[in-house]
Length: 242
Image (cartoon, rainbow, N blue to C red; front, top):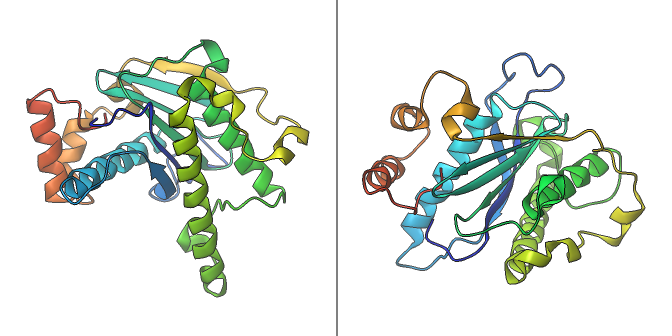
């Protein structure tokens, strides 16, 4: 990944796994919204677009097998990906750079803390706390509320971008960055969250097929992104996430 930032991407995905996580998703997983710290300029915009396409593709594939209340950590040479679905069918994904080392261990490490913090916030929005986040995909929104949905997504993206900027300024002091003062007064609903570690993406997919093969066969990725992934793999490059 061509960035010096510790936290590269933070986003939310509708998994459609609830209420029965032992069955396949009811629909194909979709990205709700996200923010990234990938360097963007006129010269690098196409590379950034491919990187984000590949992040989203990988996240959607992982959503198909996600289990509730489990923080999954996947470490590769090119970075680390964390994700969690707290049981409401909406997963939080965080991608960190290969150079970043969390300052602590267990569920108190910084990336896991970010994941739990945002997952908790999504649960709070579901029970009526007024946060500018939405848990619904476009096909779940009444057409008359589509404008409000767009406003919520814009607000959510702005918040995520601001959070990533602050987190990357002090990556080892993320605990000091609060999402909202009201969050401290709400009971933690994620006490039962567990953490597991997978060594590779292919292990986490558990679908009998490698990610490289899924990328090559996908109809949802641009030719540019497929070529970018193939070239990065050939060069053992760190400029493509997972």
